Image (cartoon, rainbow, N blue to C red; front, side, top):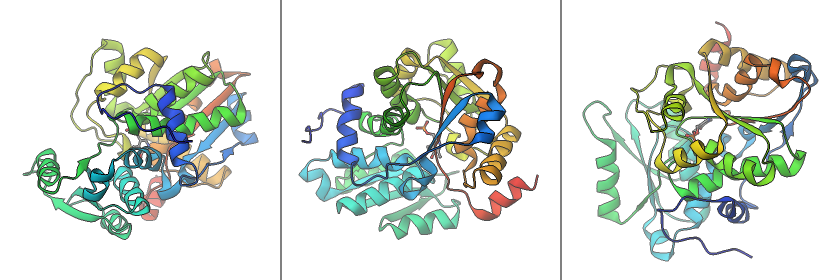
Length: 328
Ligand SMILES: *Cc1c(COP(=O)(O)O)cnc(C)c1O
């Protein structure tokens, strides 16, 4: 039976919200496989379990949070639809979810976003509004659309229903393989990490849980250590899904409470992990999706003999870019 959604947007989600999200997305999101690799086990001296969200619908875990958030809309909200700002996986997650739930979606994207992403988002039936990222304010544009058409804005990470939806990936992982000693999760704005933290503390409370960021964009690590949210300039990194400037209020509250530490890896280390996934495991993983495994490879000594989980967050990378990254 579906529990009715908690109405206010202003609550910090708990594991109960993750289990409610799991019921809402069941039959819509793919229950992605948990992959293993003998080579990876040998490299780390550990038993490694990869949750393959690169094989999720639209190619990333973002579908989980978007579908859960849109499923919680009331009748008026459904009629008016959703508006979101994103040039990446959140755009596609929201567009596909809206299409499946039969509601209109408007996605605000920078006009210099990759043409393929604009086409993919339109392909899910969303209307795309382009803006100039150097002269126009995206928040203002989203808000104007929301005000004019009564559409509900769904942010990419700092929203309780989004966080709860993202937490379903780690929930499935623990249900499938049992408790783990260590879990590595990619970190941008913290939706995936905070959701994973709720599932981890409920299902495998003793797990050491690490968020992993690109070295150039370590705002999460700085925030974790300072005890308050630190803002940085948009970082230059190949991990385009983790180019966030700061964590969210809800995500930070959970992360500071439930996460053990935030680690960083370099772009070169991401490329090595990407090469490993392609050549040894035969899977395409986008640079941001490699953060977790790159961190595991970097700190392999403490993992000896452990049961280790890695969430592979997504696989959306342009083939020409993929090939040129691997050629370096
Ligand atoms: C959005 C995204 C991330 C970061 O997720 P947050 O919830 O913002 O921390 C990581 N990897 C991929 C593939 C993404 O699309």
